[in-house]
Image (cartoon, rainbow, N blue to C red):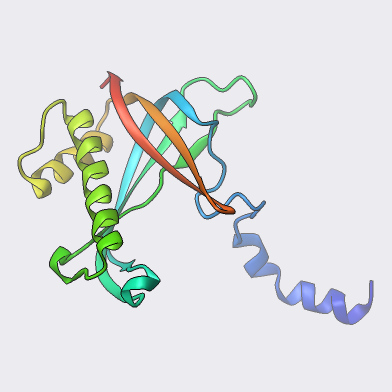
Length: 175
């Protein structure tokens, strides 16, 4: 290896140490196989500075959005010494649903909201009436002393050359 190349690598060392290894698994990282899995629901991350991008047919406009993402760990993982931990698919919901123009993008926003409501309903054990209150309850539940275990269904959908992943919290095992 040339000295100049070595010097470049040395100058990148700090960034290299903090970089996440990417093995082509997509932004969500490694996931379990498609199907139902018993998992611990570890936490939920909520951000208010996300973007919801409309389909190109709708002009590709970006809208301010909130993003919610759950994180899980398989309860049993015989293939590893430490069970797989994985991030669920981000649930991105426009802050103003009425601003979405393209019909397909409206459908996607509705599906995202329904998936979030399904997660909340399962985790809380009843149909949530108030979104803010339900999110606060789930955040508190996942940050509490008790582990939350659930059946999580992982779904892989292929369109063309792309594979999309989403997950659904089906039922609680304990909590």
